[in-house]
Amino acid sequence: MKRFGLIGTSLSHSFSQRWFAEKFAREGLADHRYDLFELPTLDAFPALVKETPGLCGLNVTIPFKRSVMPLLHLLAPDAAAVGAVNTVSFSNGRSTGHNTDVIGFRTMLLPLLNGTRPRALVLGSGGASLAVAFVLRELGIKFRVVSRSRERGDLTWDLLDPAIVGVCTLIVNTTPVGMFPDVEAAPPLPFEAIGPRHVVIDLIYNPEHTLLLQKAKERGAQVANGIAMLEAQAEASWAIWNGQLDQGT
Ligand SMILES: NC(=O)c1ccc[n+]([C@@H]2O[C@H](COP(=O)([O-])OP(=O)(O)OC[C@H]3O[C@@H](n4cnc5c(N)ncnc54)[C@H](OP(=O)(O)O)[C@@H]3O)[C@@H](O)[C@H]2O)c1
Image (cartoon, rainbow, N blue to C red; front, side, top):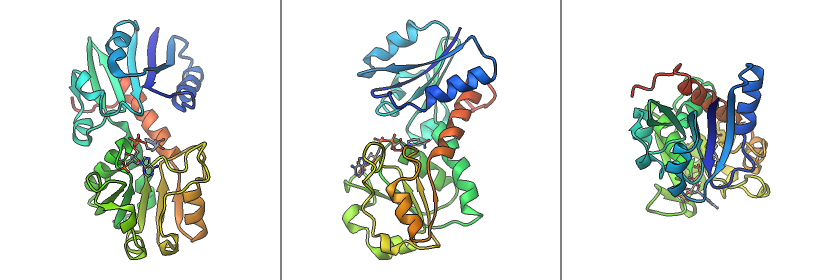
């Protein structure tokens, strides 16, 4: 049996398990299994790895994307540069951390840019924000991170005025604000500054149309949710576990 799974603290709404179960069924991989491993802390990680025979790969979600890094033998260059891991591969008794959120975000972003390099605002400074920032830097896109804390971002929310939002025509929400069940919430942007030149991306995928995307669309912006990123990062995890994606480790 080849075992895969997801580690995190709260996994009841996991997309990954359904996605991989459907994939294994579709591809006739009856000896493959993907489980949810809810861990209260990472203290349980070494025992999980030791006591799960056939473990080939894990996905990592909130709140372990950064804290899992020192527990791994190797880091792929992207994961080391981003400073977060969302995929772990196991081979010959060694664990390697990867970041497929980078691949997922790049895959969803490139078609939306149409060859342009707009100024950007990245809302939030957590694990997904690090992956987004990595891709924007790679593409030469200037951006500012908006945070509740002056230490973690370039701007705090109270400094986000219509002039800044008007100039930054790419907006990426990496906060969980608006995520199920909190669907009536939206990041506090001056929406009057958003218009048809804007591309507004919400990494949230549940609900499909967050209040942020609804409001931006009403103002004429092009909008995208996190589903394309989610599928692309899952495909990339699968390719890594199968040795089809060389991450240069
Ligand atoms: N589509 C995909 O493939 C994909 C991949 C990864 C993540 N995501 C989604 O992205 C979101 C964030 O995930 P993550 O792993 O980056 O989580 P995270 O590490 O917890 O980071 C979220 C960040 O959002 C900000 N934030 C949190 N609560 C906030 C609030 N009430 N108001 C304003 N800002 C708040 C915080 O930044 P400050 O402390 O700086 O304010 C925090 O660091 C989740 O909704 C997740 O589902 C989607």
